[in-house]
Image (cartoon, rainbow, N blue to C red; front, side):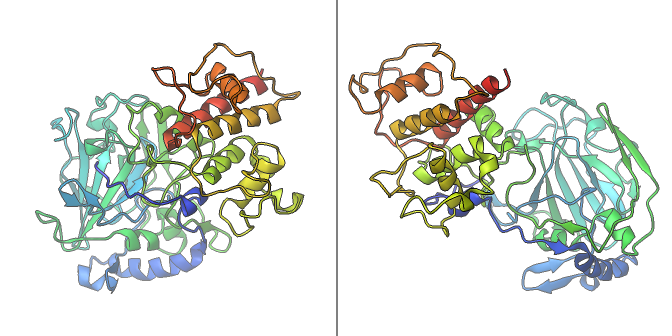
Length: 462
């Protein structure tokens, strides 16, 4: 899956977690959804079940998962040779997906036909809806559970008993998410498309599914709001996991649902430009799990771009001072004159400064938007380890000795650079230089924070 990397100056909202996360009561969403779904149950034509405001087409569908998940509106985004015709909804491998409408299924791959991009089978499914529209589910699982071998077979892609032409009911489990096709190098997700009036070659009937997904209730919410008919209890097994689809009672007065956008789930990394073969992938993934690195609006990490002093300070605070971020504002006055309370990274920089992890560039200024250099990065992470050392954590003795020709004796950062290099947190280059004044890259920053965090966790747990 090819994404276009859009360079941005600074991270701003990136580091705040992407789009806003205002919440809407489920009861309001269900009122809209039920009004649409009741007419849709009769199998009326697509024109009768579509509400359009410009390009905002809303169809009476269920959400394609058993529970709400967040996703990005990436419809129309440039891809290799075409535009993206659906929305990508992230979910771990093996997460069950359901029929968004009643209808028949088609295009199930039982022959092991490989993808165009790789030799592994590609699994997808087309749902011919009774409403006259087609719904395309792409990147279904092709792996043996617990692996990434591409040998899972259709039994781990589709729900048991389904064949081409099988009839399914709204809310019935029909398949499992994965990374087959051109998603082999990205995080498992469901690519979901809607084609008004049915699929045609070239996808000219495709519409943006974002608005339908945003309005869609889950099956349980639909039933609780008076929808029907009830789909019988469904039990399917994926690997060693048994999934039971049951109907539950949903409180429409206290339950809220999250809107789409931003980082998906704790532990779910979704950066289209971070690949399995990248040397820093494990580090970025670890920081996603720890809540240090957050999702971006366009799905890219831009690993080789520079990183600002504010962004690196935010990484430090999120990694080592998460408990202080909620109370730091009350702990004292504004530390730096150029980091005001309205600045996106104010809390993180205040916390890092109050704990001694960062210092200004000339007394009261921090220069938050200046790119951080490799030597500044090494010094900051060294200070962080020093500040954290105490009863629960002891800095171990360096396991190696590295000398750099461009960090001579007497250099202002000599002790910190040599210490963190000895702890295998930073490295030099093959020709024996450190390049202290070079701008640090985002991938280097992620690696440095992840290595320091592993060292800290190891010492704190010993």
